[in-house]
Length: 276
Length: 347
Image (cartoon, rainbow over all chains, first blue to last red; front, top):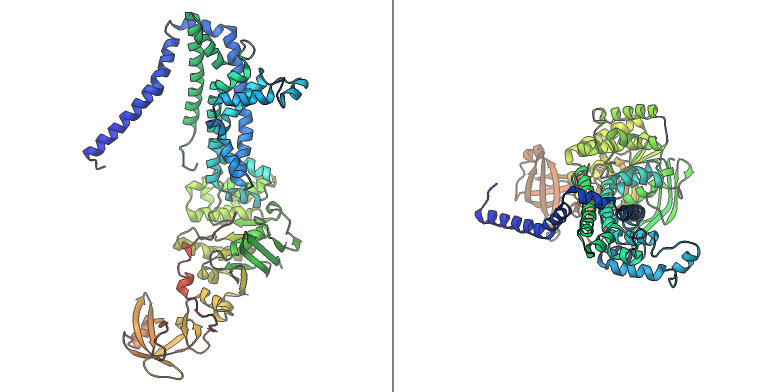
């Protein structure tokens, strides 16, 4: 490779900028969380994890994230197929709407959900409450808020893959006698597998970390509707070393789960852009 | 009759892709749908396969009205220009797909797949992924996959269009031999007139959504009924208001019969062939007449630029009277480089 000095300087400058940017914005702050967590050794961390509030908060977060991801996977694939394979009036509007959760503040999402689903004045909430299903200040609301904010992640991963593979494989499968469902299960799904999995992991990471929308719809009552992120906020604002260690521990675990999931999926996934 | 098409029409918005098509295709025949890009031939093939729905008319396959049948119930083998290989399945998995869908016993599938891979000379690649095959191999795999379901008819949409020239020639000779062995009713779409003339039992020329002419290759070449068919099937030149093939012209250095006098304006040798532009004396505003002859012939007659010559069509030459103001030329129709223009697909 023929390299001029100017070229080399540019390259190193670019690298420095990128590394510096990542260092000050991501790596250093996250590392500090880890450092704070283990500042007094392992014992306080284990004590923090033994608190029933912490255990409950993580259970609630995990189950809400799980259901949100399940919902987003099913609807995400459905909407992706609809967007790519069919033309219908309003398709572009739907396409734009899918990105809404990325651009609208989660707090607004939470408020909107409260307006519709609250048990006293909400449009749907009153009927649901009479039927015995409480949405707001209860797990269903938390799941809905979480699903809403992470909806685009699956779709934005799956849509480009669907566009790239085109329709010919599906048509070939149909002409070979496969029904719509067989074609989807045997041809489409394996083709979008990695995109879908990546979307699911992103969606999971986002769901674990959701704060704003959940804060509004859940009320954040400890041992009832307090998720891990809400617990972090509550403990962080209270006095005392035990509380702050608990906050850092919960934050550290949240970050750890997301990072580990991303690392696993990235290492499993075959190189992007190459056909398997 | 294996395929009976009656009154089929199809529009895409304002564009008329097909207009009132009637066509019968005999059982066991190898038929080519030939025409320029965008002429509607691929659409017709896709309508036969059930991948596209006609706006009007009916399609009958082996006596069964298939007009309303979805693709998966037509038992039609379809081969795509770009192979449509199932990327995540092995070659054997691809070929066995249709049988697996039909829930055949595993042993039977394995035996049939082996037999077909043998037929298309891909036995040693059974466990590879399509990405590890060349274009020609992928297309043979696609063909085996289509044949696996023992289709009533085999449909091929520009099957060799994405391959380079040598592989294309090789594969079409191979398709001809395969058809002679398997004898399944086959329809293939092409815009390469040489491919159609070389392979097909019968050619259907389609242009602007209509059938121009149907017949065996020789008949179409020798007795075209329209200027379009004449110029699409081979090179043409204009002499005395008629379209005539440049190799059907006799050229001499002395007057003979009703020959037209002229002067050689351009002398161009391409391999074994010599191409001459002859400017007629009686009509020097018209474009020069193109004459082709063998190099040996040209040498024997000592032809060269500037020489006075006389030209006339050979006895029995196919000629079509020009009725349109400007006759299409072979160059306009781009018959010499067919692979460059992909057929637009309407999805």
